[in-house]
Length: 160
Image (cartoon, rainbow, N blue to C red):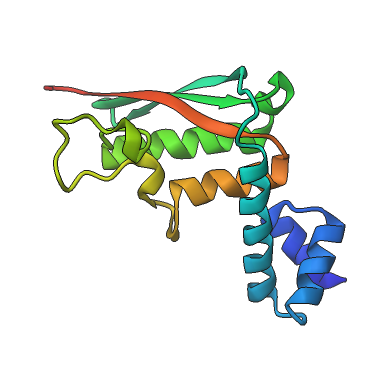
């Protein structure tokens, strides 16, 4: 029961999902975390065709020199008001301020983008190098149960 509580607290997944993941992983919490992540990716792909008409625009200022606006979308206004969604918006804005991506996804990259430029969704997450931004979004999708997408972003820097 303690393992279920720990896994639930860490992932935000439901009790039954945590129990099933631990059963599949023979009690190994690391393996159970991977099982839950795979289920989250499957859940995210099932929701890929849903409309994202709600969300929020999050602003972030870093050191008074870099500013970011990120338009993060979801399906309902209820989800847009939740802490996990707001935290995700903040994490993405910090990522943009830090890494200066040229576009949201590989399809959105401008033609004049640097050959070494990496799209936002494919970048290594600055708070956890074992994840990409897309992985982080899929984790929140798995715990919230709605489609989430980065619609667009703008980054400003003093002197540019």
